[in-house]
Every structure is written in C-alpha cells, then in structure tokens.
Length: 93
Image (cartoon, rainbow, N blue to C red; front, side, top):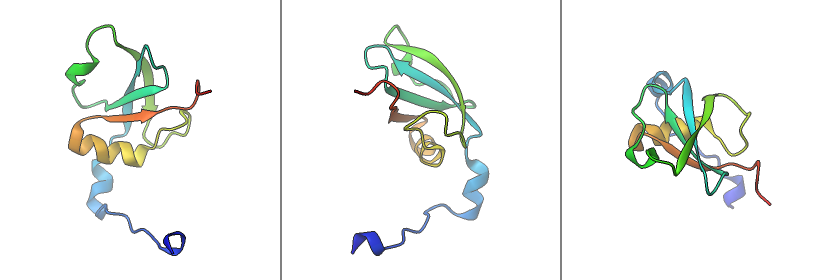
C-alpha cells in the first residue's frame, strides 16, 4: 500500500547547507493565490518583470506563515529552476 511506504529524503546531508535561508515572494496580480518564490541570493526570473506580478514580501525557508509554501520543496525547486511556483490558500474560495 502506498500509505504504508516510507519516502526517504533525496537530499544528501550537504544539501541542507545549500538551502536558501529566505525567499522573496511575488504574487500574480490577476491570480492573487499564485506565488513565485525566488531565493534572496538569486536573480528574479524575467517573467516576473512588468505589471503582471507584484512584490509580496519576504519569507523564511522554515516559515509556515504562508499557507501552501513549503521551504524544503522551494529550496529544491530553486536549485533547478531558480524559483518556486506555488498556490497559496489565503484567497481560495
């Protein structure tokens, strides 16, 4: 059964040190629950430019303040993509 299986972390012990400490959050204006988290030490992706997205603040990688944000997943995604897109839950109906 899937529920009984334990999923091992794919991160090596050294990967923990590579996790971003904090992310800049950008919110899509037309879809306020769509966020793009960019590590503070990374360049903002080009698709964020313009009036489609707005700065939504800063969030620590270990924070639980933004429903839908997972710092561990964000760090892994940012390593490969430079950013992490996620759906927040503050405005969902």
